[in-house]
Image (cartoon, rainbow, N blue to C red; front, side, top):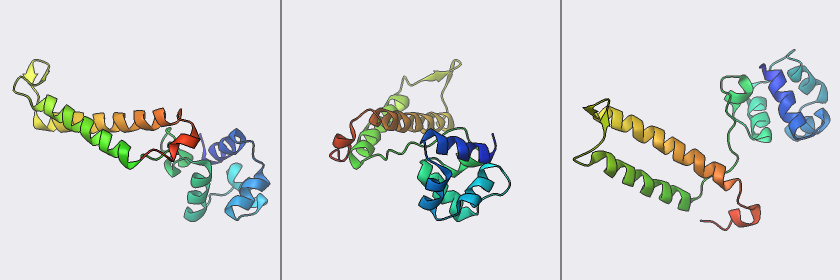
Length: 142
């Protein structure tokens, strides 16, 4: 999917007109139209503004990733909870009767790879779960 198609899709998802988006990021309607029709590519600063406005990653807009970012940031309490979970997982992997991989003891490199994947999964799950917390309670968490 091209940059123009993704820009148009994100704008239409929010039911915004080209004029509204152009005003929000400080460009003309004609320029935005050229971006959406793939006649022109935005400069770096404009691309950042569009990504921020649509609450997606620039890599998503550029087609380098199919994943959109979550606009929900983790609070310090969330970071502490994640750190505690990760320490528990690290302890479990380090026990004497630790985990085996295809009948062989797991290497330190494999443990680190598992830890990285688990941390990413826990962070994503926490962000996704926060989407379902009413906004009026989100700011009070910390």
